Image (cartoon, rainbow, N blue to C red; front, side, top):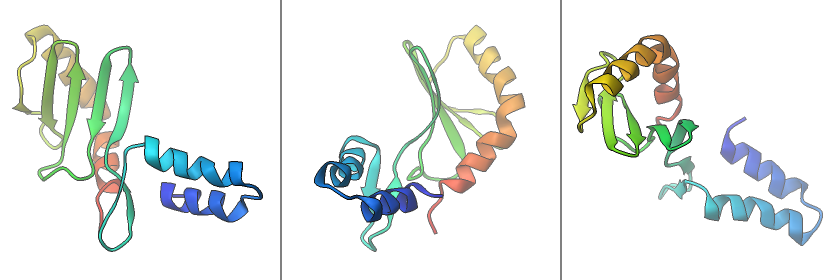
Length: 119
């Protein structure tokens, strides 16, 4: 079930104002946008978060498919197909660790990228 379907279901099943307000709070506090055609999209997908590290795939990002790794001292992006560093600077030891992780995570990253594309 997509987030849009889930929110629609919550609205449909609401029996009081408090229950009706919950989907609105999710929309207003979450990473959502509404396209001109009325389609609800998640504008940022958080792939993983551990302490201060975030790995993101952003649905409104441009091709080629890529993911972002954000930490205390870096903000970099890597191509999903090759694992090549696209943008940013990262400590060589961190780079090697991301590359190791990437080799194992690539199929899931590709799957998430495809799921977050509109149209």
